[in-house]
Length: 63
Image (tube, rainbow, N blue to C red; front, top):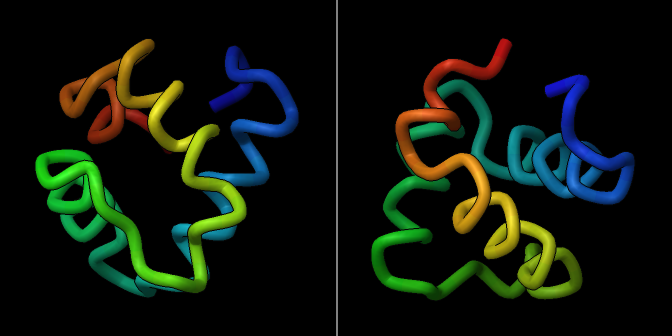
């Protein structure tokens, strides 16, 4: 996650807090639908950029 810009790291952290334990799976599901819960709408653009940059495989490699 260190290679991502600070705003994208913050977006991932917000998604992690929102989804909890299975956050990567839940975020991956949001990526498939290109739809996010209302609580994540303010970071939706950052999450889409992350999806376009690292993809789902990259998401699961994050620590």
